[in-house]
Length: 168
Length: 137
Length: 172
Image 1 (cartoon, rainbow over the protein chains, first blue to last red):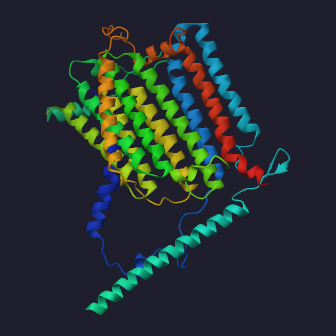
Image 2: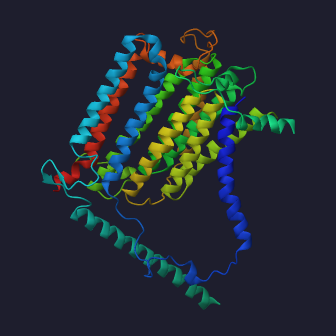
Image 3: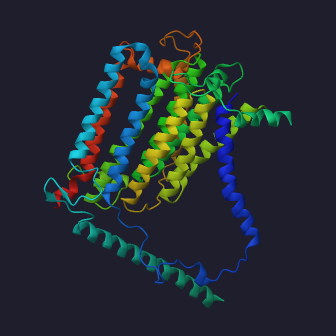
């Protein structure tokens, strides 16, 4: 009955199985001797510090947003493209209006330079890339706060351990 | 054995070539309008459960991103109800029309909401619900 | 237990488990992947309900677009404090009430008299998306919604890109 999607299911199961069966087999075969040095985070030989959370560039969000909008345009245009042959000229005009309205948006983001990945010069003036100085300061403050809270948590843990040792 | 071969046979048989006319495969639709299908009540109950879970997430979490995700869950529950009701009414196309519009609205709501959230973070530090109480920027 | 019931139970388990992960996980990124599970489960229900176009749209729009947007939104905002406000016990009973009201309302709407024609003719030998397209393009049905959707997408495109960009140029 649902054969069309059974193909999808079989392919998905095959893909998942390819990953996890291999992982299972190798976890049975490989030697397992963890040490503290092996399990530590590797960062170019340096000791890792601070939070792994860094500010991303805003352009990633803008590009994903533009992609999403035109993705939705496809969701609306697919039923139109299936049906417009039966309905004559008026349906074509309606679809054309839909596309033209969204084309205005495409022109807007194009002209304002949101589609350019390297925004060195847009509209004849340089636009600053990345976070501003205030945002850098905010980021630094948050990292320091987090490090302080982690340090205090560590201290309480150590105190707890020492107190249990004292009682023993 | 017979069952297995009947399950696997569509994998090895090519369907008719897609012609320029707008003929789309119908097997799924015929299966859904056939006599044997999942009872509509089960789907309704599942949609209500999904809606309740979305409401729960909306109430217990304070991170605004997770609040948005809970709204997504609630909107998906409505979509499921629309389609279950449409199948119950002999595959009414109105159900799919509503579902497409709801999907578009949900995606658009997320796009604007997250953009507002990011600019909120740029003005203040947090993205908790309580951080957005002032109206002055 | 026949195959359909088994498929229903499997997909229902996936959906409910995904939404529970979304609600309870400590990390927001895990919530996003839980949401992905839940949305894929809902796509599976669309397949069971004979709406194959909607299943594909669900996967393309949500998993391909919205979840990527969520991930970028998480990377652009501070980490979660993983707080869950469960102290108020009344909050935990409210979702049950909401779900029950939703169920009653949808059941009443399905047997309601205000919906046109319970006895619709079964669809002819064309794909249902044909009729969906006809409804979208018919001026007596959903043509206004169709064109307004494009206006909505335009407004969101311009507005959200503007909101996301504004602070750069102000701090220039």
